[in-house]
Each structure stands twice: as structure tokens, then as C-alpha cells.
Amino acid sequence: MGRPETPVDQTVPQRAALAEWLRRRRDERGLTYAQMAVACTVSAATLKRAASGQQVPPLSVVSDYVFATSADPSDHDDLDQAMERAERLWAQARYACQRVRYTTAGHYRIPDPRLIDDRADLSRALRDLHAASGAPSPHQMHILAGEYGILPTSTARRILEGRTLPGSVDQLTGFLRACGLTDPYTDACIWWISAFERALHTEPPALAAHPRLERLYGRHLSMAELEKVA
Image (tube, rainbow, N blue to C red):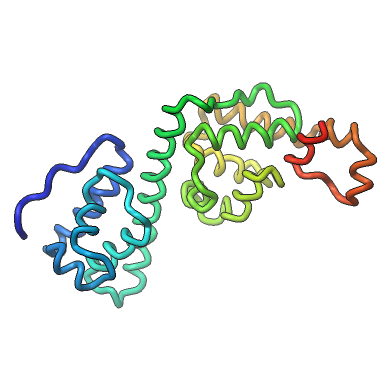
């Protein structure tokens, strides 16, 4: 097996969790990185870096690592479960690293949902929350939201573009979970849910103030457009 690996870098716990999980898979199979490289499309050095905990490797490399350490790659159910686990750990690690970078820069602050009055406020606040939490991609948000299908990638993208709002309280809590607010019973989450219900029962002031614009476009304006004309 060669020399022992250096300890996993623990600077970012979520990144370390991914690296430790990858290392456990290799240890359980008793493989060297050279042996693993034969079974996949990347080099032994790339596989070793992926499990160092010093950086978040590309998802494609993580997938190669999982495939190379599968006891039976032809067992699709087992491989699918491992890939699903790997994808979740990878998304959490990347999100955590992005969040450190964004919040350390000091350019974003978490919005106060108690100040939300209408749909435009809510849309803007959700996008600010997303930025303050590290700006995970729509696909990352889909993974981090938890329950399968609660926040589809396409819906997350439309929310982040200001084109729509969460369609239900469950979808809102999925969005919050993807932004790091994982406990729905905290005051912060309860304030967001109250703001969501308050906003949905309030006619958008910008739309009410510009009925000609609505007739001109022949449709409801998106949240981003409402902000431009407000």
C-alpha cells in the first residue's frame, strides 16, 4: 500500500468529510492509487489529490474515484447509491468553500426576513440570502435542498433569476436548507416562512403602480422586472 497518506486537511469540515469518505472506500478495498487509475480515466496523482482534503475536486474525478473503489461496478444499485452519496458530500463541500470565500470578502450580509412586505421584497431577499450563503449553483441547491424533487434545478435557477418564487412552504424550506438554514424550527426559518405567507397575500406594489406595463407586456412581470420599474 506504500507510505501512509498525510492527514486530511481539516480547514473546511465539509471538504474534509468528502476526503475522509473517499479514503475509507479505498481502504476498504485495499487498493493503491495506481490500481485505481487503471479502472478509470484519471491519473493516480489526481485521485490522491481528490482525497487530500486540500481542495474540492471536480465532480467527474469524484465519480471516477467512486467507480474505481466499487466492489462490483456491475451492481448498478450499489453504485448508484454510492454516487448519490458522493454527489451530496461533494455539493456540501463545494458550497462550504464558496460560502467561506463569499462571506470572508464581506460583500454580502444575510437579509432580515422580518422586513419583507411583498413579492418583490421576498424575491430580492431570497437572492441576497443565496449570495450571502456562498452562491451555490442551481444544481447544488437541488442536491442540498434534501428531499428529492423538492427544489428542482430549473426552479432554483428561476428563483435566482428573479423570475419566480417558491411554490410552497416546503419548497421555500428546501431553498433555505440549500442556503444553510437547515433547521426549520429556528426563529430565522420561522421568520422566512411568515414572510413568504405575508408576501403571497400582498399584491406587488410595483405591478399595481404600473397597470399599463402589465397590459403592454400581456403577462405578469417577473420579480426582477418589477424591481426595475418600481
